[in-house]
Structures are given as C-alpha cells and as structure tokens.
Amino acid sequence: MPNPSSLALLTDLYQLTMAYTYWKSGTHNKQAVFHLYFRENPFKGGFTIACGLQTAVNFLSRFKFDDDDLRYLATLREGEDRPLFDDAFLKFLGRMKFECDVAAVEEGTVVFPNEPLVRVTGPILQGQLLETPLLNIINFQSLIATKAARVCFAAKGDPVLEFGLRRAQGYDGAVVAARAAYIGGCAATSNVLAGKLYGIPVKGTHAHSWIMSFPTELEAFEEYAKAMPHNCHFLVDTYDTLNGVRNAITVGKKLKAQGKKLLGVRIDSGDLAYLSQQARRMLDEAGFNDTRIVATNDLDETIIESLKDQDAKISVWGVGTKLATCYDQPALGGIYKLSAIKTAGGQWEDKIKLSENQSKTSHPGILQVRRFSKDRKNVADAVFDVRLEGTSEFTIIDPADMTRKKIIPPGLEHEDLLVPVFANGQCVYKSPDIGQMRAHTLESLSRFDQSLKRFINPHAYPVGFERSLYEHKIDLILQARNQNDRAHHR
Image (cartoon, rainbow, N blue to C red):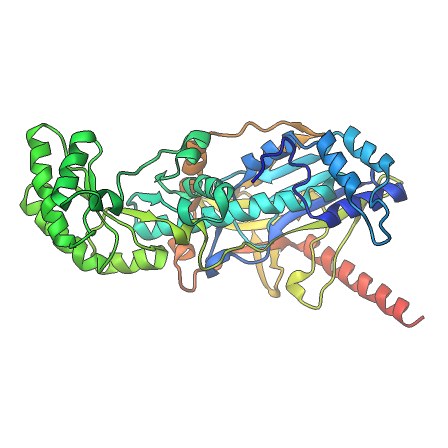
C-alpha cells in the first residue's frame, strides 16, 4: 500500500460530494454538532472498551488537503464527463484549516450503546468530512480492545500475548490491532513494528521450521539454547508433544547447570488441557516448577474459559487470529450522526433522523455522558444535553424501553466522560502513554460488577437518557412525523 503524505482523502466520496454541495449552497460554515456512537455491544457482551483516540488525534492534527490530493480530485468526472468539482472548490479545500471543537472519551474507558464516544462541533462541511475516518479509526480499535479485554478476563490474570500479525487484515490493520489489544489488556505482542511504533513489549522465540531444520528436535533445542540462552521457550509439539517436553527438560537441565533458566514450553496443537497437565507434572518432577506452559492454537475467550474450567495447567496464552480479526464479529456498528445546527439567529436547532426501526432513530442535542458511582463502583450512566448542566437529580430512561427508568439521587460521585480534545482546531489534549491507557482499561473494568463481564447473558448496566432529553427526543419524533404526514397529504 502506498504511504501518502496526506490522509485527507481517507474518506468516502459522498462525504466530498456533500462538502461540495454545502460549499455551493453557501452553508459550509454553518455550525453543526455530530456524535459518534454505537447501538450494540460487540460479541453479545456487556461492555465495550473505547479505543483509537490518539490515532484520531494524529489524523486531525494533520488534517489538510495537499496539492497531490487536489490534483487527484481534479481528475474525477461526473456523468457527462465534466469535472466533478469546480476548481474554486478545490482551491477552497487547499486553503481550509481545521476549526472544529472535538470532545471524546479517553482510551481504555468502558462504554455502552448510545453513549457518544466523540462529539464534533464546528463548520458543517468539516464535521461531515470527518465522519468516515473517525468511524474507521474508532470502530476498529474499540472492537479489538473489547475482544482483548474479554480474552484477558477469561485468562483470569494470566498474561495474554497478541500473535495476530500473520492473519490480520493487512499490515496497517495488524499494527493498530496490536496497539488496541495492548490497551485492552494484552501483556505483549509478536508484532515488532507495533512494538517500535507504540512502545508495546514484544515476545517470541521460534516456530516449527526451526525444529524441522535440524536432524532431531533435541539438537534444535540445544542449538537454540546456545544462541539465546536467556530466551528459551521451546515449542514442543512439532512431532510428539510429551516427548518434546522431555527434550526441553534435557536442555533445561544443561541451562540450569549454567545458571540459566528454561523459561517455558509452548504447545500449539492437540488436547491442550490434557497435554498441559502432563507437561506440568513432568516439569515439576524434573524440578522446573517455575517453567511456564504457553498455549497457542486458535484461542479465544470461550476456549480459554473452557480450558480454565478443565484445570488446564497453562500460564501464558498466545491469541492470534481470533483476536486480531475479531473472528466472530469483524465490525463494530459505530455510527456518526448530525444532531444540531446553529441558526442564523445564533440558536441551536436540534436535528433527528427517523427510522422504521426505533433503534436507528438518531439522538438530538449537544450530548455528554455522566457516570455515577458509589464506593468506587459505577452505578449508572446518564446521557444528557450540556445545555441542561444545572440538573442536580437525574432520572434516566432506557432509550429502547420507556418503562425502564432509574432515579439517580443527588450527591453521588460522578465524572463526565467526554473530555476536550480540540478547541477551534487546536489540540488541547495530552494523551497518556500506552501503558497508562492499558492500566486505565483494567481500572475502568474493575469498577463494574463481575456480572457485566460474563460471556453468556451478561448483566445490563443501567444507561439511559436524562428525562428531559428523552422527552425532547420524543417531541422531535412526533413533530417530524406530523410534518411528513402534512406534506404527504398536500
């Protein structure tokens, strides 16, 4: 894949055609508000981990159409083989400076459906152009981070290593997947480029080809131990797993005599529960009680949970394909919707999109998420309009079921999840380092009940619209339908 100097064209064409028509109609500087959110937790789970903000910050900080972008856009043609865009519009794009305010949820924060992860306020043309790239960045990384958190939860504190590079969707997908997996809780990655770019610990020793390149497995282990005596994790299932463990023990005794350690053995196939139990017994009997057993082989959270239930003696888990590709759900259904436009008189006019499917009706207003807690445990989230900041007592209503309500009494501890990231196009956010993001994920998850994290029928954490916002949304729905009905009967 080419490596362009500008990523401004990382968008769908219809974003540019809409930008052009805003410009042609003279409405391109009209102030507007957009929100990015999702409708359902992935993997039929009880939570999602927000991820990708720093990538988005890097994109927005360099958001500019360069001369090469404009030359390409000038080549595009419409139906009658005329230029798709006027030269004056292309010159406008070339001069345009990013001017939006952006607020977002910090990476590693647990989030839920219908809660905005990003809020963009600014010229409608610019806000529109950001839809596709922000969705691309936030959707994928939040999905991977969530999968990683689930896998780590199944591992119950054992280290999880991200091994998905060779099966990921492209090298760029593999790199950001490694980043998101680490933020989600993984301890390290095999991806050396991701390690360099993001400061993620990297792990790895050898593959079956190393064993097969020698006359015997024992000789392969011996030569590896000579070359890298401080990095000896031996892959033991090339021919016969338990015999491989015996060969590893033989070399391990030589290492011990040199004052070095047999760090681990890796099993990549077969009955992982049985083989790990036998390997543990053999290692312990030989005096290698601290030698770790590493398991790989198409693992995911359900397989790891099952192996744990079977008392498998595995202490490190290498998870590749099903993490880096999110094999069972390859996309998070994030969306980006217009929610308000400022009128010529300077007033905000809230906007709503209707749908026959209630869950696809968009949310109006200028939104924030407030998380309430008691004794360091989260009790409920309220989505509210920032123009109602003075509200002291919240009653939240489930947007999918108006009969489900919860009163949040005053006096609870709370935090607002959307924090300022850009002000008038200038970055005002100092990103934590990736280790701090990972720690934030673990801390954020710890503040929720365990029932939220189970894989089958997880508990539904209380999230709702503040009452006046919910009622305002219903009023806008009724107004829009009445207007549509009147127009239809003219």
